Image 1: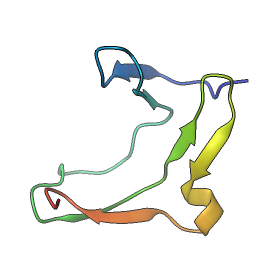
Image 2: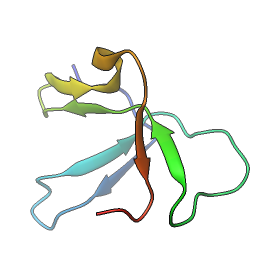
Image 3: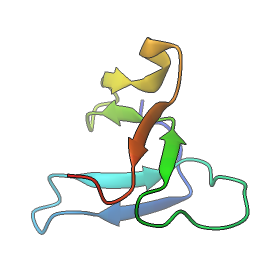
Image 4: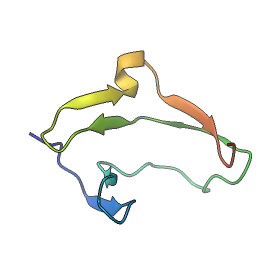
Length: 68
């Protein structure tokens, strides 16, 4: 069973990648280029199978906005 969500965004024309917002973050200012952010994520197939999640690593994933 898929996780309930509050918003869904199609990231590709063929709907191969879909972003679902489960819970909105709480905070003030939005991050800008060069800022480091921490996110909790879960990669899930249409049938509900989880293939990766930050919970598996015991902490949120950190990355720099705008870095390639």
